[in-house]
Image (cartoon, rainbow, N blue to C red; front, side):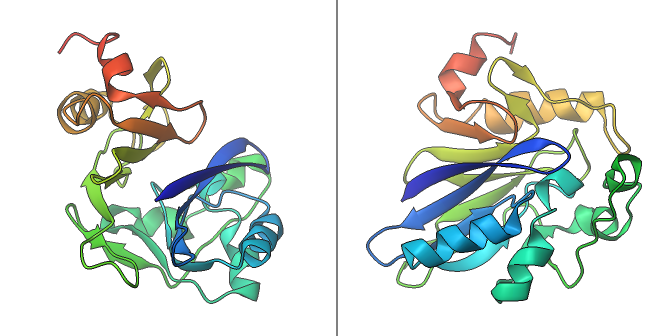
Length: 209
């Protein structure tokens, strides 16, 4: 599986990611936060089949490109069940405060431990690890075979995410990082929403566990 980071910018800049099996040209799109038309162009130019859009959480800077993508491509959207309110409440997802009105309807909801497979794969590719704290729905998508984790805004290179927005919880955030992310193998690469990639081993040195 190959990771392609695509920085996109709406009101905020955010990292969107494609996780692609190059042998079959199928994969996932994670956190299409803005510039949906540009993401569609990438998909078409690469002749990829994106089977699912996966959301690490429901803030609008991680969901803002979905409507434009759905106008062109029929790709189902998945988010943790605690994210239902964020997708349709512009105050919770913060878009109202930034002069935007981002709503995502008809999403599919999953629970902690959900697995996501691709066509042609006998085993699941990604496992959902519920990592609340930044938001109640925050989720890490973990690829155990390739030692990859998409962590959203829970942890960044050199520090943890923020708990200052509605639904944030500092204790949950610290617990999620210590018990659910930094317990992954040290060589696991962490891909976040707003920083360069890092590893579990590198981040462990910054925390007292």
